[in-house]
Length: 498
Length: 88
Image 1 (tube, rainbow over the protein chains, first blue to last red):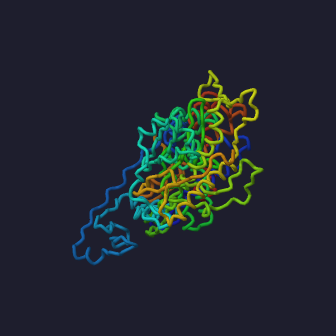
Image 2 (spheres, rainbow over the protein chains, first blue to last red; image 1 turned 180 degrees about the horizontal axis):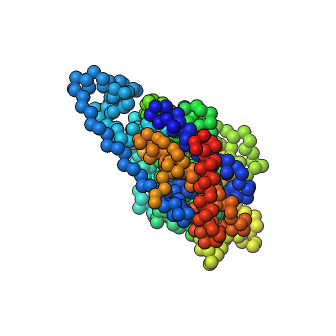
Image 3 (cartoon, rainbow over the protein chains, first blue to last red; image 1 turned 45 degrees about the horizontal axis):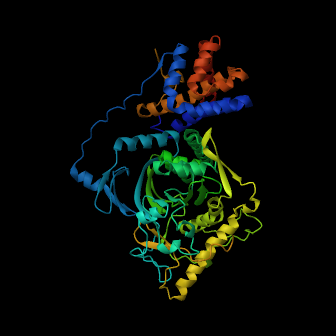
C-alpha cells in the first residue's frame, strides 16, 4: 500500500470504502429498523470512542488506542534572506495576506493595521484532512465586514427623521395616570403624544384612566411566548396564552434534525464532486452551528404566518405586542479552504442577515398607506385576510389598536366576559353575556387592517396638505436604533368601522 | 491489548495521516456495529432504545453470546472492507 504522501487519493478512498461498507449494511436493514439506526448513528458521533471501547472490551478486543501526539516536526533553519525571497505578500480583497513558500497562508493584516497570525498546526491538520478525504475542508472563516442595512437617517422632506421628539410626547408617569404602560425594546422606544387621547382618537377610551393597556415592544422577529420571559410582562404572556397555545420546542431535536439535513446536502454535494457546492454546504453547516440557543429557538418556532403585532386581553387589561425585530445587516466573510490537493483557496462569502423581521426603519416615518402593497386576494368576505401587506411596527401599532377599538370596547362595556379555568390559570375562555348577542365584537382582520390604513391615510393627508409641517395627525413615535425619531399614525374616526 | 483499527484492517499510512484515518474509519466501524446490533433486536424492543449506549447495554444484557457476535461483526467488517479496497 502506497503512503498517502506519495499519492494523494488513497487516504480518501480508504475512508470512503469504510463508509460504503456501512451504507450497504444500512440499505440491507429491515425498513422498520432503519429509523432507529439513523437516530443512533446520528447520536453516535460525539460518543463514539466511549461506546466503541465498551463494545470492543466486551468482545475481548481491548481498548481503543488513545489519540497519538503528532510527531514533533524537525526544526528547520532558514536565513532571513531566504525568507525575504520566498515569503510573499498578496492583497486579497481588503486584507494583506502573507504566504509561506508553499503558498500556505501565514497571517493577514486588516485595514486598520492589525495582524492576525494563523495557527499553523490547525492549518496543517486541515490540509491533511482535505487530502485524506479528498474534498475541500474549511480552514478559517474571517468576518471582514459587517454593516447594517444602509439606513438613511435624515429621511426626506415627505418622510423626515426627527432629531428630537415632539414636545407633546407624554411622560411615563403621565401615561401611567392614563392606565398605560409601555415595555420598551432594547434599542427602540415607543412614545405616545397627547393627541392620541383626544375625541375620536385611537386611545380615547383610555383618556379617563379607568382602563388598562400595556404595550410591549419585543426584540423579536415575530410575536411568540418564547420571547416573553421578561418578568415585567408575565401578565401579558398569560393573556397571550389565553388565545394561543404555548410553544413547546425541543431545541436539541430541531438542531440535530437540521444538521442531519445539511450533512445530507454535503453528502449529496460530495457525490456531485463539485468543490464549490461542497464548500457552500459546509459553510451552511458552519453558519448553522454558530447559532445560539436563542437563535435556534427562534428558527424552530418560526410560524408559517408570523405575526408582527398581536392584541390580547383579560378582563382587567388589554395588551398589544409589537415585534420590533433586528435591523438587517450584511456581512462579508473571507473563507480559506484547503482543497482536495492540499492547496489553499480563498473565497468571499456574503452573508445577509437571515432575519426578515420588520425592523423599525426610517422608511416608516410619516407613512403614506398609498405606498403599501395591496393584497389582491384580501376581501371583506374573508375576515382572516389582510388587505395591506405592511409589516412595519408603525402599522402594527395601528392595526392592534384597531383591534382594541373593536374588541376592547366590548370588554369595557361588559359585553364580553372572561372565564378563568382555576386548574389552568394561564388560559382563559371567552363567553358573551347571555342577553347581549348583538355585542359580538368585530374580530375581522380585514376590517382592522382597513381601519389602520384609513387612520394613516388621513394623517398623511393633513401632513401633505400642510406642506409637510403639521405632524399632529401622527400620534405615535418610535426612536430608531441608529438615532432619531419617526412619527407614525392617525387621525381618523375610530367608530367608522364598528 | 489495544485495538488499532488501522492494524486490524491492514491499512498502512504515513504517520501524519494515521490519526485522522483511524478516527474516520472507527467512526464507520462504530456505525457498522450499531447497525449489526440493531439487526439482532426484536421489533418490539426498538422503542426502548434512545441512545447508542442504551443499545449496547441492552445487547450485552439480553443477547446471548453478544461478545462473540461482536467479534464476528468485526470480522465481517474486515472482509467487506477488504472487498471494497482489495486490502487483505
